[in-house]
Length: 401
Image (tube, rainbow, N blue to C red; front, side, top):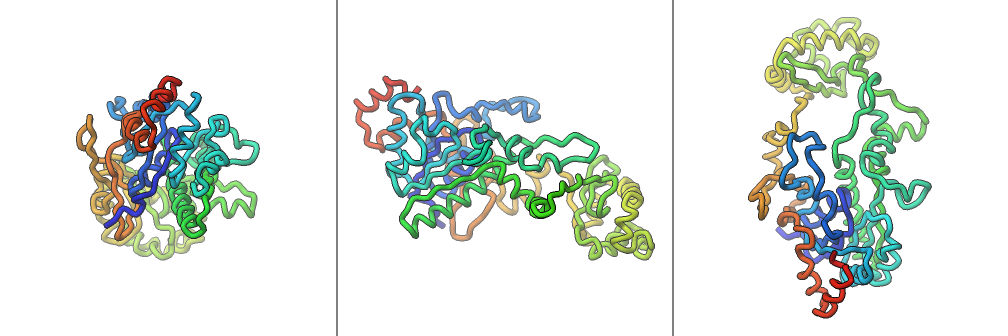
């Protein structure tokens, strides 16, 4: 197998998650990704994982490692004289420039400037709210732009509870996949036309896309959909229930009429199939709260493992509400190659997430750990053809911090 993006050079001037995560996937596909970091490094390097709910902060920030693996790092302080020219030189023979920085014109890394240095460049801009409109200059992390502003937060949680918060990077990683797709399209278009392309991706729009089933209807109707209420579910066999051992399972039978006869047989209530309250979809909707209470009582009579066995035997749609360690150790994760191992110079070998796709005939794999801040500065400058005097001049002006 070959690395499909071998020979493609990517310059990344970005921080935090969405843009760097997309660049990491480009590196997985074989691209040479050079990460431009401020002196001291990308702030995502130093994020305290205990604020994410873990007991103790880890010595290695494994979230940063995931989003920056396989790259080379060069330390550049974009505020210093000489820094913009250095970035332009880096982009001179690059294929893709990826950024989420907001003051691009001020720092001389805007599209017009870099396109002048390389007309064939794919210029990629990632933002919270898009490049135009009244919020274009608003700073937007995923919990604000993706989660709250897109409408996802307002649709989530029980009707009587405050809307829940999103997990760290949840919207960023969805946006990274969107960005990866757009960059691959832009490379294809450039191969056909010979012309550089502009890619724009924003967190808010990605958020709308992820709730497209709701958003497509609301765009026409103007309505706000009701939040899901598990006490009065629209379909009681598409709902969560707690088992005897305190675990939760999700019944996911959207096609209720198809699964209903098998479900009532499995749960030990075959008479429900003929019960005028429950025998039809309309009847189950009218008596949803009553039926939910009956199912809840029955599910509470056995442990999760027992229900899992019975649901599988009946070929019904269900899932355990897994803990994250359980999900990571699920045999399906192993069987489908969702994890891979990386060798880290300090941490040794550890498991991490593989790219979330597979292409036959193409090698897709993490190509090493994330770099240390500025680890490859000298190496990259030498490849760029800078002589000792030029490097000394840049150092004296504070470009490297």
